[in-house]
Image (tube, rainbow, N blue to C red; front, side, top):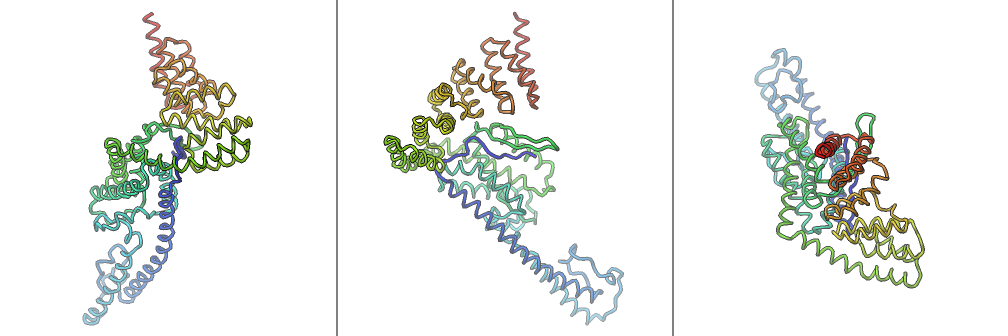
Length: 474
């Protein structure tokens, strides 16, 4: 079992009201579906019982076509015994068929069929309503959690006016993809996973470098690891494609083609937004709205700091960043106040958040300066290993190897305790090799080997091969 539980960009400038409402709507619809399904089940059972009892009392009657596969014929019917007059049987036959039609009509009017999307029928309204129905509590819980992980960021970036049409249209495309794959299916399609797959596709395009944290549980072994979106989301898509090929008729009860259709649509939607420049414009509009709202509250907190009222300032700023976790200005003021009163816990937290936020904004120099300052003051503990790895990677990419090595060294010194640290250690070794520091690179590779993290044998062998070839050449 592999479940994503968070990622390093779980933050927004404003509370994701639309995503929250979508979650609430899905929960409400699930409760309504369960309640109506119970009532419908009782009505269908009563209709089935009525037709079954009547047929048992008149076993010589012919089987109505709508009952085929629903109930077993009476024993006398199976034995082929005829005991009633034709005239009497014709009246009774008509009544039996009327009861059978009544049962079929009730059975067909199930809530999931009425509001779900049935490919064979092509009910247009169901293209939207099916997205708010779920087949079970786990189906609902996992879908809502996956939605929360990626939809919050999209709503924050594009705004509600663009996000909602994108989300719903992704669900529609997913349903139509399912119809193309299974045009004669009479099974209702339910669930938000097609629309959520669209959000995942868009998330991949816009937040490809974001590291996602996963919980894994295989047998008695469990743990967690981090990996970038550009790796894990395409792997998820590849798995869906594999299952779609292996179960072309939907034999496992999952609409894999719908997931594929939604994901591809969402990714293409995000690409179009980037190419046309609308992504940047909408993001700037959101930033402007939040900045106008921020100014007065942050300025008031700054005034409290200037007056020496640090307890009030810190309380106000912490309440503010709880709602606006991406506000650099608020965290800078929080750091200023915490530094004056030497509140190390708050200082560590502020440094950690600011380094992460500056990296997100592409302000590498500011992020590095703050990290160096935090180290000098003994407050670097708030900068997480995932953030340090991003800082080191960006420094290496920016052709600042000495600075990158210093940051990588801090990650390695903390120990290779998870996959994220192992990846950083491999990057550290690769950079050392590029600088001709083979012995140090070999030591870094020893650390990864000693951690026994799965999946790192190929890069270790590749880098060790470089060391050997260079030694032979010398």
